Image (cartoon, rainbow, N blue to C red; front, side, top):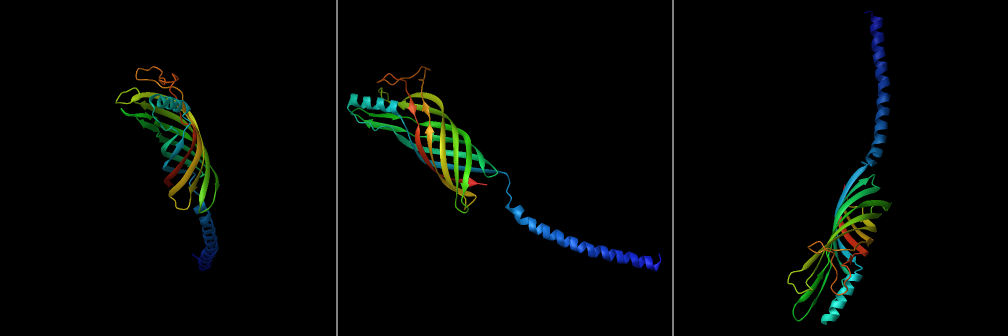
Amino acid sequence: MPWREIHRTENDNVEEKEMIKPALTLLVIVVLSVIPSQSAWTFPIGFSGHGGIGMGYYSMKELNDHINITGQTIHTSFPDLSNGINLKLEGRVWFFERFAITGGYEHYYGETEGATEEATLMFKAPANVYTVGGVLKVISFPVSVDLHIGGYVCFARSVYGTNEEGSRRLAEFKGNENGYQLFAEAATNFIRPLEFGIQLGYRGLKIKSFEDRYGDIAHFPTTRDRIQLDYSGVFFYVTAGFRI
């Protein structure tokens, strides 16, 4: 190969290398400028789970009317069954950190009793409740709390138990019903993945019919009205869990 051509080829290679250097420098600058915005981007789906303990305030008019009449008949005072401890477990699937689909389990405690000369009469009204619903993040305060609103559909299964008819064992009556919950909550966002919160809401849930062990509709002995348990009322929970 002639000397001039060899020299020209070497010069071309040097010029190409010189042209590549600015391009690489520009590429590095672009990558470095993009990395912060990419790190701020979050995966569109997240998960959270938490448990809670709180209190529910019930509207047990039919049951309390029966309890009061029973107390007057046997000259014993029974406290009204108007509230009970509530427990819950719940999981949520979050989309774009804004909206979540939820599924959960709750247990409502509720009982009252009174002592007579012969025995202690008990009225128990627990319920197992399964919930499905949604949660919306309304506003977020950085390094503080997120404010949410939400609602559930409730599927309740209750067993009403009492020994008022003289049996040592509680006579049990089973009932099922659906209802709803509406709530607002505040949850911490500064110690992720841990999350703590408080939830306040209203529950509309009344089980209007119970059956005895033979499958017959059950009635209160005093009023002859159907056994009904009304868990409707205000509730609150203190919650703790995680969010990823």
